[in-house]
Length: 226
Image (tube, rainbow, N blue to C red; front, top):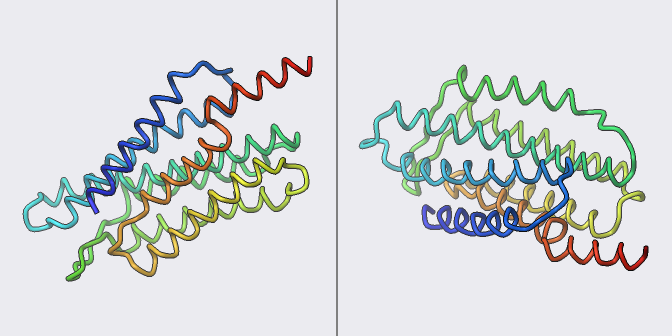
């Protein structure tokens, strides 16, 4: 599993290099995606670290394992929040509808981050197939991911007719991927594939909406229209 996490980290690092090296218009949408890319890279680094430490509970100091898992879960909550923000801004730019759930999303983020980073205890389950974090700490993570994915799905459904086909495809594909990974991870907690879902979500937006070649083509089309 550690090899998979390292591979995902390298793939997104390459994507980030291409993304940040390309000239683009600075908009709230692109600013959010930039922040999302950086946060996902940090999250994947801690994902790889916890995959290593959780399966070496007898050799890794408990305090180190605890801190790494708290940061790993905390960055995951921030990632799914930024996914919601990105989709909300995307829908707002496309339809002109205001973001009504932003305050609720921020309050939920603050409360859940306080829980996973400071308050809630971290527990581990050991099995012959591998170890994983469990208990209320992990449950808050699942609940938070579900909360933000449902907000995103609600935006997609409510504005289905007003969103372009390409953007509907990007949002729908990203949500389908993450819902599927969450279900598989829930039924098979030793798989530790949450990083794969987050990476594929990021790639779905990058390849369909944030790719520099696509943006360059749109700019040329606008100039030709003028």
